[in-house]
Amino acid sequence: MGLIPDEAKSLPPPGLVNRNSLWLAGVGWCSAMLQNAINHRPPLKSGVHRQALLATIGWFIGYHISKYENYTFARLDRDMNEYVRLHPQEFAAKEKKTFAEIVEPFHPVR
Image (cartoon, rainbow, N blue to C red; front, side, top):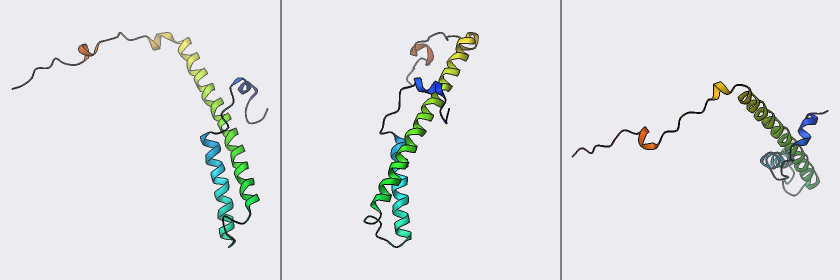
């Protein structure tokens, strides 16, 4: 058991392109560019292998953060639905009203 418990294996995997992966890949690439700029090297041309490596590491970490995020939200949804199932008196259905019953009658002033 690592960061994500075994019960998370039943969830569908997140897409390869998700917001966390894109964001952290961009952060990894920008950190390589910043390191090149600090060391007075051409930012785009030098250390392309390091840029690709840090972007790939960021992508990998972002993917696993998305997996953990999906597990956390699924767990919270499961717990909330279980609570609603066990306490139906607290979540009684309200009577349905039409829109005409909610608003006051309109009387134009002329």
